[in-house]
Image 1 (cartoon, rainbow, N blue to C red):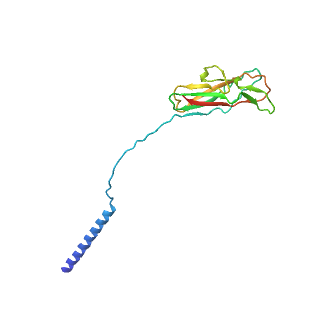
Image 2: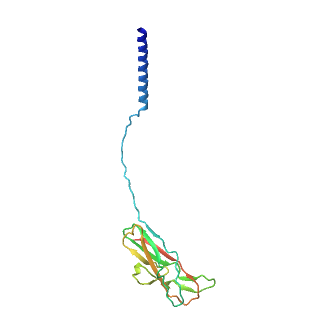
Image 3: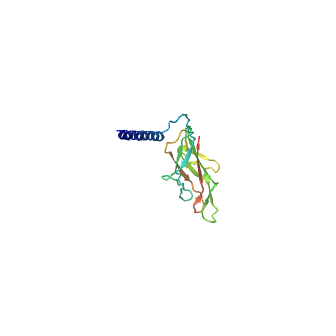
Length: 179
C-alpha cells in the first residue's frame, strides 16, 4: 500500500504543481487592471463667408452692319453665383479697355466700349451702356444663393458704328461680391 500511497502523493504533488503553474499563467495572460480618467474638449467649426462666380459664358459675338443693333437675344451671357452670405451679393461688369479693337493687322478703327450695352436683372429690362473703369451692377440679391447657386443671365446689344469690317474685341470683367 505504501507504493500506491507514494504514487498517489506523487500524482497529487504533480497535479498541485500543474494547477499552480496554470494559475500563474492565467494571471500573466489576463489583462491588468488599468486606471482611467476622462476629460472633454469643445469642437468649434467656424464657417466663413464665401462666394463663387462660375459657368460664365466664355465669349459672345454680336454680328451686323453699321447702323444695325444686334443683341445676344436667345444666347445671353450666363453665369452662376453661389454664396452662403445672408446679406446677399452683387455682380458687376466693366470693360477692361476704353475701346473694342479690331483683329486685322493695320486696322486702326475702334468701337468705344460705352456703345456696348447690357441688360441684366438689375437693369429691369433697360439696356445700360458699359463704362471703362466703372463697374455696373448687373445682378443683386439681398439673401444667400440657392444651395446649387443662382443662375444669372445678361443680354447685350450694340449699335454698330461706321467702321471697317472686322471682329472688334474687348474683355468684360465680371466680379461677384458679397454684401
